[in-house]
Structure formats: C-alpha cells, structure tokens
Amino acid sequence: MNNINSVLDQLASEGAAPPPGQGLRFAGPLLAVLVLCAMGVTVVFDGAFASMARHGMGPIAVKWGFSIALLALCGLALLILGKPGRPSNAAMFAVAIPFVPVLALLGFELAIAGPLVYGETWRECLAAMLVMSPIAFAGAISGARSLAPTNTRRAGLVAGLFGGAVAMTAYAPFCPELGMAYMAVFYLLPILTMALLGWALGPKLLRW
Amino acid sequence: MEDPADALDRLMADARAGDRKAYRQFLAEASGRIRAMLSRKVGADSELEDVLQESLIALHEKRHTLDPGRPVGPWMYAIANYKLIDHWRKRGRSRLVLDDEADMDVAADTFAGMDIAALLGELPEAQAEAIRMTHIEGMTNREAAERLGIGTSAMKLRVHRGMLRLKEIVDQPKT
Image 1 (tube, chains in turn green, yellow):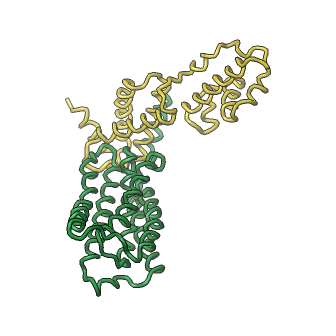
Image 2: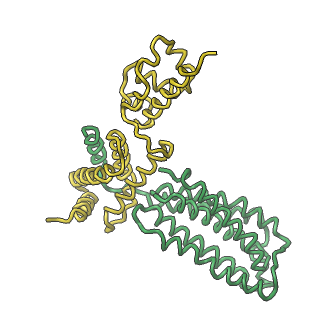
Image 3: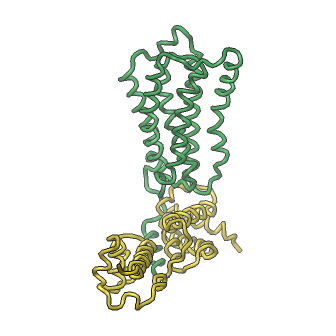
C-alpha cells in the first residue's frame, strides 16, 4: 500500500495537464506519410491526371472519392479507437461505408459488361500499392501509438485500411485504368490485405 | 451526497485546472475503484498490486486521451481492463497465480547436496540469474525485479519456471 502511495505522490507531482503537442503526435505521422507518398509517386511516375483528357473526371472521381473518404474515415476511427472507453462500433461501421458504392458499381459493371480486370499498367499499380501501403501503415501505427487503443486488433485493422487508402490516393492520378473489376483487384484487394495484416499485427505493434 | 462518478469527474476537472491536490485525490479515488474491480478478477495480492500500479501509471501517461467533458469512469475502467488483459497476456495467457510462495511447489530439499552452480548453468541465463538473485543472494522478487528493470510478475515467472526446470533436471534418471 505504501508503494502505491509513493506512486500516487510521484504521479500527482507531475500534474494533470496533458503534455503539449499530443494532437500533433497523432496527426503528424498520418499527414507525413500522405505527403511522403504523394511526393514519392510524383518523383517516380510521369503524367499525373493524363487520362482525364481522354476519359474526363469520372474515373478519378470514383478512385479519389473512395480512397479519400476511406482515409479520412480511418483517421477519425483511429482517433476514436485510441480513446479508451469510447464506443467504436459506429466508427468501424463508418470505415466500411466507402466500399458500398464501389461494390455496387462493380456489380453493375459485371452485370452489363463482365469482368474488365486487365489493364496495361497493372504492374506499376501493384508496385505502388505494395511499396506505399506498408509505409503509410507504419505512419498510422505511429500515430495510433501516441493514443491508447484498447482494442488493438480493430486499431491495427483500421491502420491497415489507412495505409492502403493513402497508397491509392497517392497513385490514383497516375492510373489510366478504368474498370471497376480492375479497381477491385489492384486497389481493393491490396487494401484489404493490408487491413488483414494490421488486424494480425495490431496487438504486437500497438501494445502500450 | 455526491454521486461517486461525479466525484471523479469533478476531481479531474479541478486537477486539469491546475489543482495538484485534486489530482492526488483523483488518483487515490481511482486507485480504490480499480483495486475493487481487480480484486474480483485477480487472485494473488501481489499480482493485483502490480496491475493496479501499471493501471495508475497508464492513467497518468495517457491522460491526454480523456476528452474534456467526457465521463472519467468508462475511460478509467477501459484502461484498467486493458492493463489486466495485457498482464495476463504477458504471463503467457495462463491464469497461473504467482505468489511469492509459488516456487515452493518445489520441495526445499530437492537440490540438497547438489552443485547449484552447475545446475544453474543448464538453465536459460535469465532464469538462472533470477534464481541466483532470489534464492542465493536472498533478494525479494521485487528487489530483484527492480535491479533488472523488469516487472515483479515477470521476475516471479522467471523464478517459477526456472525452479520447475531445475526440478525436471534433478528428477531425470542418471544415465
């Protein structure tokens, strides 16, 4: 009991005011990986938005609509998951929402045209996703560790989704491919794989 | 009579406004409530004290995760629960109770007349060191843990596993 009292005295002596800069410790790594990935693809690839001249705003609107919504919702979900005692079911439900219109469009495409998976630039697309997703995932984990996630599997899964969403957001302007099946195979599958990896690694990486 | 949950909220609000006495009071109040929760879930007293201490340190270190105006109770119990589960996980997913007497499962005269140094040489270094410190140098588990910079439960676990391994070695038939 005396030991606990001395711990309490020591903790109380530091005061209750939160240390400064906590918001930045969470948001900083998330924004940093987004900027890093965006700059990285600009250096490596040429012709951002080149396909807009031929196909208009539609394809990039679908890709960015999905990926930016996903990364914003994942950032918010990570913030909620990092605060102990906050219910997180709604946040988990919210991160699934961007998949709904994409899957609906995929179903529509499959119904009228069949699967259009092939795209000439699939290697670049896959390489970009495989390289950038883990980098962005690491940023999300770093941000989440500044908080106190008590459901580390959920937080890991969301960090994985965030990683994939950042990679897709960065690469999408350079992607000339159109099909929803292509998007499902070369964007959604890597994103979901990253999420699965996050779910598996969350308890180890987010332990505090 | 003030609602106990409100008391915690009020103390934390005062503490955040710069009142250190209120923060000390808040921590003492939180300590009592977490202890009551843990006592329903944890067997050994020494183990309870470890988890309680870890929970209180976590409450302090992660105090920025409590949003102003949100109730303290769910936040505090979520952290304590996490620390308890983490404690069980660290201990190898077993609910084995490690009291100070746990390694007395091995009878005191088991190693009588044997070359202890040679026996310890057959153990992993961490376990050998733990037994050397607690059973030869006479330190308590807590003192030895502090010396090595690990938790008391981890030290107890090392001693316990080491003693069981030693017993296995001694019990092996000689060839």
